[in-house]
Every structure is written in C-alpha cells, then in structure tokens.
Image (cartoon, rainbow, N blue to C red; front, top):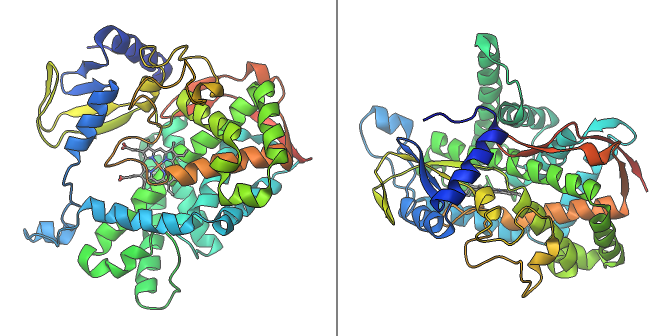
Length: 408
Ligand code: HEM
C-alpha cells in the first residue's frame, strides 16, 4: 500500500480513510489504525492488562528471571508523588521557573516553538529529577532537545557523525540519571520530592537498568507533548485575540492564591480554552503500539505482535463525535453545550487507561499558568500573526512562529 510522504498529507489521508471505514482499518499488512473511541479504550485496557516490566538485561543474558515489577506499581509511585506536588506552593514554584526562562529572553526576537519547549521542559525537569547541577541539567536538556528535534525537524540530520553524536548525548544523559540514583541511594546526594525518588528505594528489586528506564520514561514524556502543548496555547492566544481577551479578563480578576491552589476551579473559562487547544492540537498525533495478545475489534482481528496506531487527534477531529470538529470553540466544553463531546471516550488528550498520562493534571496546570503569565506579566507580539500556520509532525508545530516578549 502506498501512503503520502508528507506527515500532514499522511494525516489527511488517514482522516479520510477513518471517516470512510468507521475508524478501524489496515494501514499496512501488520499495522492497524484504531481511531474509534470505544475500540481504542478496549484495546488499551486489554493490551496492558497485567503488564510487568521486562527482565533486567543481566538476567536476560544469564537466562534467569528478574524480580517481577508490575507497571501498575511504577505508576502508583508516580501518582503518589504527583499528588504530593499538587499544592499552591509547588505550583508557585513551577510558575517562577517558567517566568525565569521567559525573562531571560525578554526583548529578543525568539523562535516561539523553541521557547515553548524550554519553558516547558526546564520548568518540569525538577518534578522529574530534582537537585541537578547546571551542567547535569544542560546534559539532560540537550538529550531531550535532540530527541524532539528528530521528531519535529523538517530535515532531520542523518549520517554516521550525526548518529554517533546523538548516541553520545543520550549516553551522557543516562549517565547523569544513574549517578543521581546511585548517589541518593548511598546518601551522597540528598533525597528529593521528585518522580525519580521512589525508585531509589526500589533499586535492589528493579536493578539500575530498569530504574533508568523508569526515569527515562518520565523524562521522555516531559520532553515531548508538554512543550508542543505550550506552543499550541501560544499559537491560539496569538491567532484568536477575542479569546485571548476573554482569558485575560478572567485571569486578571482572579485571586492569585486561589489560582495557584486550584487553577481549574478558579478559572473555568481558561480551563475550557486549554481543553479546546488540547482537542484541536493533541500531541502526539499518533501513538504506535504493539499488540501483546490477539484481539477482536468487531469484524477485525489483530494478531499478537502486530502494530496498531492510536490517535487522540483523529478522535478529536472526527465529525461523528464532534459537531464542527475543525472549529476552535472552547465553549463546547460548557455543560450541556450541543457541540460538546459526544459520549465517553471522545475527549482523550491524555490517552487511555491503564497507560493514561500520569501528568495530565500537572500538564493542565502548566498550560493554565502560561495563560496567566501571558495575561498578567508579558505582552507577546508576533508579526503577521494571521499568516502563522500549524504543521503536523510528531505533534502539531506552528510554522515560522517568531515573536517578541516584553513585560507589561
Ligand atoms: C499537556 C501536557 C501533556 C500531554 C498532552 C500528555 C500526553 C500524554 C499521552 C497522550 C500519553 C500516552 C498515553 C497512552 O499511551 O495512552 C502520555 C503518557 C505519559 N505522560 Fe503525559 N502528557 C502531558 C504532560 C505530562 C507531564 C507534565 C508529565 C510528568 C510530570 C507526563 C508524564 C507522562 C508519563 C510518565 C507517561 C507514560 C505513562 C505510562 O507509560 O504508564 N505527561 N502523556
């Protein structure tokens, strides 16, 4: 089967086929698109049911089993930590980190996609792995940047030199994570309130390679979708002055302490705005998965070992589940709105249980905090804002999105 080369064309093509074939269709002989909400929910639930971490590398070589670590246990540790971090104090610290990054670029003509990535990753990094030296921070950030650039760059670098450099940067980041875990375990580094810390106590059970995988999963997760979502929020604020005004009116009137403690409750209109940005521009656009068993999806049978694609984006833009799916309208999230989500499973920006994003609440707080900063602290000017368009690569990426930020 031939498919168009350009990712945007490819998505368009998938969308047409999805509409014509009811959301479930073969893209290749062993790659199934599952863009139907109920089927996506069922396959996620069944595919990951009882998932345990793979054995340690050393045990695999020695042909013996490692201590069994269910993935639900890893997720419970993350969720417990994130719950403890969901306070006004921690939200204030996140916002201060975001401010520092933006303040350092005030007055410059900046690439807003790269700024969005920096604001997001560098402010979230202490949640994932705290207490890093500036050099360690820059090593981890470089690794996340290069992974992202490989996904969004129109002309990603190739060749042996590039690949070696990529591997070296990745190894250096892995080295930092190992060192942090080892030093915390031996008491040479203080314990921290971050998503890596619970795995220091689990090191004897997990082993260093599996602990590294767990921490890398979080680092990769904060290195991709959140930065793309920040860029999409900036894009919609710039492109829709009427919504930027409504958001600003709400946020300028809000009590700052109340906002920090519970932004969703304090600023419902801004929450609707952020939800609509995530509906229109859900990152990542496609999630590639491999089936761990054989599944019946109505008339289609997916054999073990085959690939399947999930996509919040495809579901969010499906006219069967959303009236005027391509129209940006946060008010569709008002209770009882006629153009709101049609049923369970049609709004899934954070994926599906049991692998649903653990950082959904924090990600939402970050996007709402960005709206607050843009409404109260900064003024952003983007020349020819109406000509900026969105391209679809691994995630939506605004094209030629440059601008200047100054203090209000
Ligand atoms: C707006 C921001 C964000 C978006 C749109 C987003 C989206 C997603 C999506 C679509 C998935 C895949 C779910 C699936 O496979 O069904 C995911 C997984 C994940 N996300 Fe997020 N995410 C965001 C922010 C965050 C943040 C702030 C964190 C950490 C603090 C985080 C940590 C994770 C982790 C650890 C996973 C993997 C879960 C697992 O494998 O069990 N995400 N995210």
